[in-house]
Image (cartoon, rainbow, N blue to C red):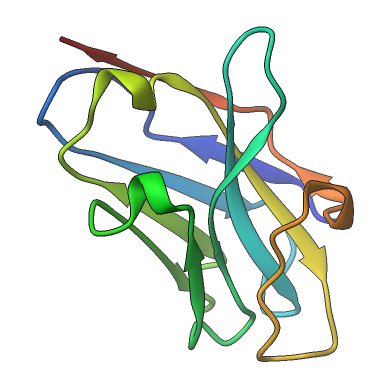
Amino acid sequence: QVQLVESGGGLVQAGGSLRLSCAAAGQSLGSYAMAWFRQVPGKERDIVAAINRGGSDTYYVDSVKDRFIISRDNAKNTVYLQMNSLKPEDTAVYYCAGTRTLSYTVVVTAAHAFGSWGQGTQVTVSS
């Protein structure tokens, strides 16, 4: 598994933007399908967005479509989540996740399929 470290969370007003980063410590992310999840207290960890190994295909949960963008820079071993037009309901702890895969094209969205997780970063959107 790969060690993942998230950064970029914080407090922002509704309508604002944040960019989360997920960096791999000492390993290449090029063999991993990646995703961002989020979790609020008392609820399950839910998928937000996912991207395949090559960066050619993505998935977004309906509630963030047209507002969030997931991307990756394999040369920098980093995955990003650009979050725009943030809403109070986006408030959560955001987790980066990775799963090693042979396929360049598969997009993985199920939490149980991911073996590597970051420690999480808090995003708080005030109204």
